[in-house]
Image (cartoon, rainbow, N blue to C red):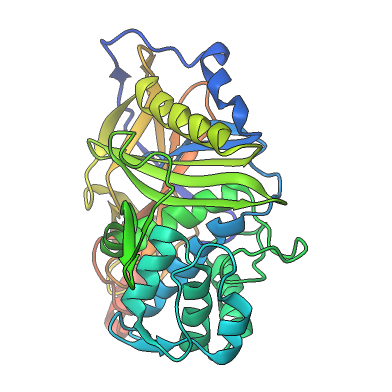
Length: 386
């Protein structure tokens, strides 16, 4: 969706109250996050930002860049343009450039490797060489792949990011992003490709050619429900991490960046994620696919389309608080037929007192075809009385 939503509909308010006391998201409780100068915590199930520090400040993501490479590969798989069983071989040029440089799978020149294995290396052991082999094989050249990365970033709303490499290697600052943009990337990857995300990310490591390597993810195996996503480090960028965890249907996404040491990054990541689960309560508003409301349709076989939740929708609020969230459906409309079932057409705005409003996507609950001549006539008459 683009532009300012011109149509909205109020949803009946739902009072929420927590009987549990205890955790209080007061400023003194967030000091453990101080090791990460840039920090962000978002509740994906409600869209609400739970903590933000310098979230719009640009920084070099280093190997977190590989999340965009993985996401682009997932998109191509969904479109049928890339298959996990396809094999690509390391070119002589890639071998000279990347053999022995940084984190790698120790790929050899001319050795065919499947896309699945390359992606496992990228997601699990941050393989620089695998990123380049995938880019050259799938797009014909690294430059072509990087152009596709930047186009995809713009498409999903990463408005303050640019990629110069497929792996985040130092490139004099041409590759940069923000915490807010990385949260968008994580959200889109998990929402669009949940099965691929679960398969490739959150592993303890991998073994290739008899060489076993560990994943340096600081939260998986340490924070309940954690399942990724990606660390990053260069001397220029410092230590960073884009992470996610899910408990009882509630998923959090976090960013910790520009930390001076790996311990600072790891401690801040664990503390931030635990605090997000401990200091807030959440209540379910709608299940995945649950009916939320209706949107007006123009020139369609019917005048409205049901709106359903793209995923489980929750309201998040400080533990122990009593709140009544204000729910508003917003969309650019009337929507223009035809509409596909499952197409993202609207958003549910969740406003909780004391926090900025958040939005989560709503989908068309059924397809709406273009109106025929008779239906256009009936719609015109009905529209005169709205």
